[in-house]
Image (tube, rainbow, N blue to C red; front, side, top):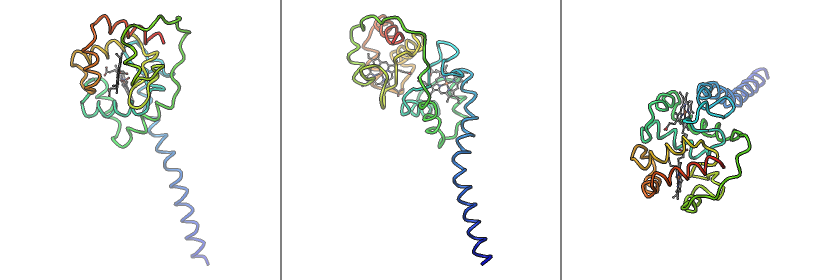
Length: 187
Ligand code: HEC
Ligand code: HEC
């Protein structure tokens, strides 16, 4: 009798420990991500325009970027150092964590101008409203500086983690890329 009760209790304890485990792991990951806010922002608004918004970005896109920084398929000395601190099996949890947060609200944007020529192509992958969808990232409301730098880096072979984006960006002139970045940042 005693034996049976004991084993029932130990099973119950084991189950409780198991149930509590994912929550504790999530807390630990969350704590380790505080450092990200020092650049990507406490409330999702990056501290300056050269740093991308990651709150509310597409999860699959975030996952791929974290992976690419780790494997050096996308080069950034800063981000390479920070993804070092994330273990490979946690990359998806980190991506989901930021994707689940709301895209930061901004002061009402100016009524946007007509889209520059050529933007219909972008909608095929980045979606009608430019809010992205697997696998293409949200572009709407990302900063002008970051968007332009990203577009130029694909065009200039500095960012090589998407053959499609490299081809597309090379086909545009520098001033077309500027006009598109300006339009997208105002959405
Ligand atoms: C010191 C500032 C800094 C810190 C801290 C930082 N980042 Fe970044 N992050 C950047 C910059 C700058 C870029 C753009 C780099 C580039 O052009 O590839 C970036 C890019 C990214 C991107 C790609 C976004 C996109 O739209 O392509 C992701 C995802 C990301 N960071 C996640 C993180 C996570 C997760 C952490 C914490 C573990 C973190 N960052 C910490 C500065 C920072
Ligand atoms: C064939 C699908 C496709 C089309 C068409 C396309 N994109 Fe992309 N774009 C992608 C994908 C996928 C990525 C993510 C690449 C990666 O893995 O880093 C991306 C990434 C980007 C990024 C980088 C975002 C970031 O946060 O770093 C910008 C900016 C961008 N696209 C702008 C454009 C513009 C402007 C057009 C139209 C001229 C366009 N794209 C057309 C699929 C596409």
